[in-house]
Length: 208
Image (cartoon, rainbow, N blue to C red; front, side):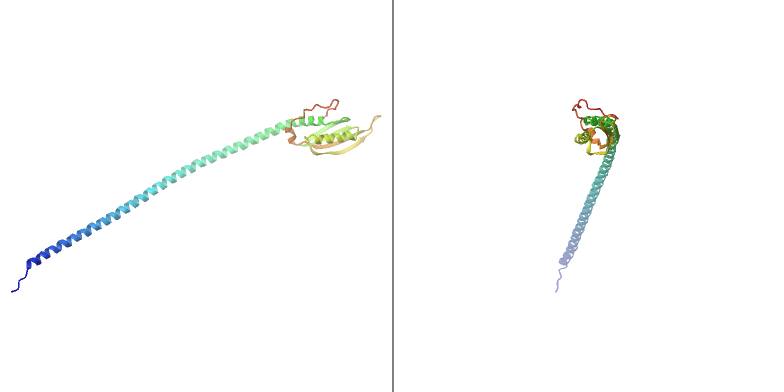
């Protein structure tokens, strides 16, 4: 007689579905964990990128504010430089006018100090830095001394030129020599302190 243990078979069948259900739950839980982790990573990455974007926008705003400030400083500097240049031009013009006022006085003083004996001037013309002297002398030596004195004074540019000489017959007196001399009186001579050496007694004064 064959006997079959149906109870054991039923017990095995009862255990099998429970094991399968437990495995399915683990897989489901694992899947949920993985998905949650992925969502967490994605959320962290999103917030990190958003934070970096916010910081980049903040830096951009600061850069634009600094650019605006530097632009204002540059414009202010340009205005200051323009005002400085204008003031320098005004100062230069005033100085030029001041030198122009001093020029005839200084020129006459310089020429009168260089006149040797036996020579006098009849006319003196000035056109800018060019100066023309006309006069009379009794000797060529006096005319040569005048040229040397003018060149050595430091107030006139070398060379001082003799334009012409002409002998005039005197009436019962020694012959006189008429002369014309051209010299250059630069503006730099105006800044040179005037010679304080007193003129020689008896030296004739220049006449314009």
